[in-house]
Amino acid sequence: MSADHNIFVTEETVEGAADGPLADSTVAVKDNISTEGVRTTCGSEMLDDYVPPYDATVVEKLTEAGATIVGKANMDEFGMGSTTETSAFGPAENPAAPGRVPGGSSGGSAAAVAAGEADLALGSDTGGSIRNPAAFCGVVGIKPTYGLVSRYGLVAYANSLEQIGPLAPTVEEAAALLDVISGPDERDATTRDEGADSDYASAATGDVDGTTVGVPTELVEGADEGVRGRFEAALDDLESQGATVEEVSLPSVEHAVEAYYVIAMSEASSNLARFDGVRYGHSGGFDGNWNEAFSKAREEAFGEEVKRRILLGTYALSAGYHDKYYKQAQDARAWVKQDFDEAFESVDVLASPTMPTPPFEVGESLDDPLQMYLADANTVPANLADLPAISVPAGEVDGGPVGVQFVGPAFGEEEIIRVGSAVEQ
Image 1 (cartoon, rainbow, N blue to C red):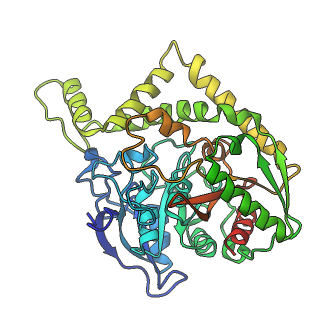
Image 2: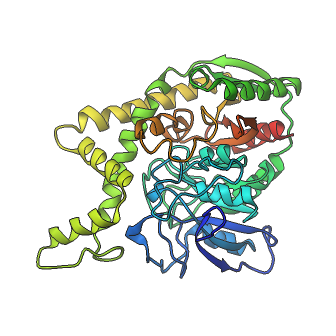
Image 3: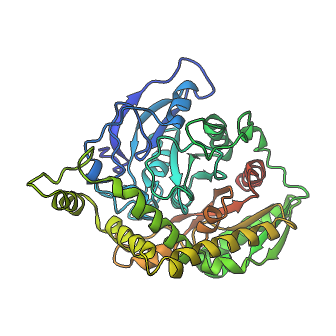
């Protein structure tokens, strides 16, 4: 564990190829992405000593591009949390705002970039887990369109929502890392041909002349006054560069958080059923009763937040409640998608504050999980609708970084990179 900010769960150097687009770059890899021969814990006691026998596709692509991997970054257990405080290895600290959380679940990845412990980092984003820590640590984070980046080798939390994506100090560097990891993979049937020959880095021109930016009123209303001030300043800046800003409405997003948590927890309860302590992971021992052994392994090795989500997800999928919860959540998801499609008929990108508040104080959200879930209101809609989104630093409020988020149409990575780079300049 890195004593410095508790950023890494495992510090290990994996050398990349001698040359390539990332030959001079160091990369921190979130600890739910498989690395052959290097411990991969998912921030959980369940996988405390698990060493994968293979590399995730994104890890193969990193090393082929010449990157040097410097360690596995701390994270909320199995990606469940918004602060990195649910990690079994203790919380990561926020190098950009001491005493505050770095966000989550990819908190270690964002902190590694903010602290200069790595040039770049990979995170995964199920409902904001790249954009939230990017905003809280004052770095850039991109959640790609669903299917742009292979999930082969990513330990699953909620398959239909999550994507691996880059964190970096600048939009252009994040885009260059996205160029390396995107594209189809025969080992992941959800990947698409888009991104195969991408050049996202060249889209970071900062040219927004003639671009229409839509502002969903529903995603600004809940934001803290200071955060809203930074967000409006960023919009004014875009207007001064020739962009047009107009209000739009996404009525469905008021139900996005509920729909997201029902779907994510349902998928988690199914995905995490494989951790029974028999094939890998923490063992519950065996004294003649397999059920006892399974439940002992899970009781001992899963943390509170993971247990909470497994229970809620199992309940939502249970026979009498499937239609009442899971089916309704899927209907709401379709409604969110439809709202976005309609909005993109008249605007190029949608903008909102990434997080409604500056970074939380350490310990603040653990007492109130619901408060933590509601903090995802601005980030989860993009995951429900499978759309690309970027968080770009937009200054500070009350001593903590603030991010502005841009969401684009499906496979519209160039658009969000272009607009994001204009804010940065």
